[in-house]
Length: 103
Image (cartoon, rainbow, N blue to C red; front, side):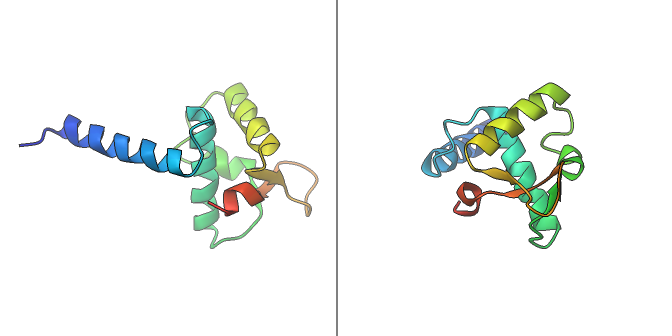
């Protein structure tokens, strides 16, 4: 009989392999969590491209992330092309970048 912990370990190994296959292994945990949060919010918005940082901040994956950590992760994801500033807004609104859309 498999314990709950060994089941989680198998899921974690599968997730790690999927992240590696997608080329996400170079992102740290906070960056991956933020990227997942952006995808989750985009899915909730029926694919709407504009996503406010406040919407993402409330996502389960990042809701307990410290403010500075959130912004460091956001900056890195922007630098890597996973997230970009929305051309329709001046501040605090983003969309998934080309690198995220290709995943």
